[in-house]
Length: 202
Ligand SMILES: [Zn+2]
Image 1 (cartoon, rainbow, N blue to C red):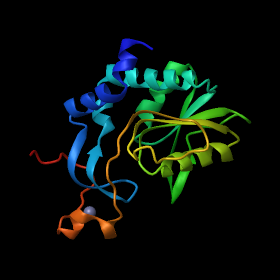
Image 2: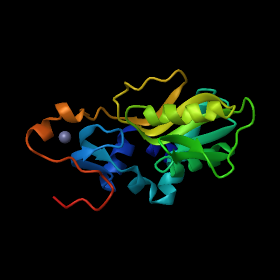
Image 3: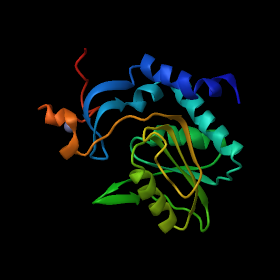
Image 4: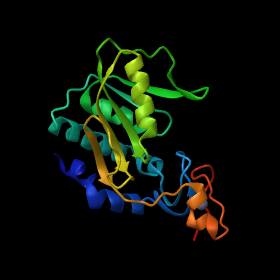
């Protein structure tokens, strides 16, 4: 593992997220529908191509260390596209993405998997694991075989469970609540969708 890969692990990755403003505090409506006092905008980490490349190389090294054999990378758009592409580049395998279509996820743009193709689903952040599982289901329906899942950040605090190896560069136990039980809503606050516009300072 190179120094840059090591820099993308654990505490130093957390420091990088803080330094680039990717770790935000407030009252957020996550894409999973849950509310949370913290949000990690990985796009800010990945905005610097050298950091994106290092994160991709670190995930690829983690998969290699687990002896996971990968034929391709599949990521959910939009959040998984940059990091998924970097992981695929580091592994030297093709990269494809699934995207929203109607109520579900689908392979579009002529993307196809070969029968039995061993793929890994790569995301920026795993919260509930739902979009990883949805992406995996699309890849398997297309004939592929899920062999691993990976993310920059597992914000479930290690509670995400997959039937395949799961590589995350950083695990954080950030609180999430259903809207009905959200203490910030109980105080009269309104959850905002992160990333849709700049958050006010302070
Ligand atoms: Zn709330």
